[in-house]
Amino acid sequence: MSNVITIPFSTTLLVRDTCLCLHVQRAARALARLFDDALRPVGLTNGQFSLLMSLNRPEPPPMGPVANLLAMDQTTLTAALKPLQRKGFVDVVANPRDRRGRLLLLTDDGRAVLQKALPIWESTHAALEAKLPNGDANGLRRDLQFLS
Image 1 (cartoon, rainbow, N blue to C red):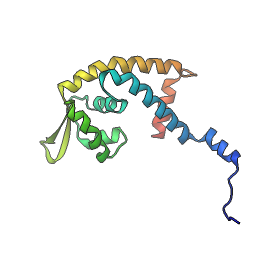
Image 2: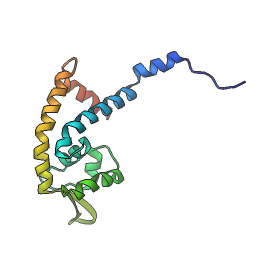
Image 3: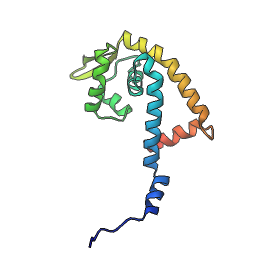
Image 4: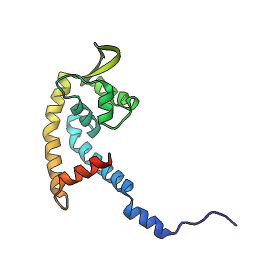
């Protein structure tokens, strides 16, 4: 006879219906698919769009702050940069103030693809916000920012 305690199926249903982590993961995957499909015509994924947009600054940022903004470690950021570098959208250059550090430079081609992608993002985003049942996109953003 097994000494393993059986968890009731009702508990499984409770977790399915109430787990914030599960619901956020499901929503994140659905949103990622939505934006991936929308941005496909310009050759970007939603993650690449976010990464390129995070580099659209007056001065090229160091890797650390970009990784923090995108909630990833620097190793993951380095891997995410590789295809964007191959496409000529990003250059990784030495930091003149700290030779050990790297700056992330959005290239002219990177700016051009962002210019094509931005109207797609805007229309997709507006349609998504319009679908929210209570119409409170700002409240949702606030709640998600609190959790992150």
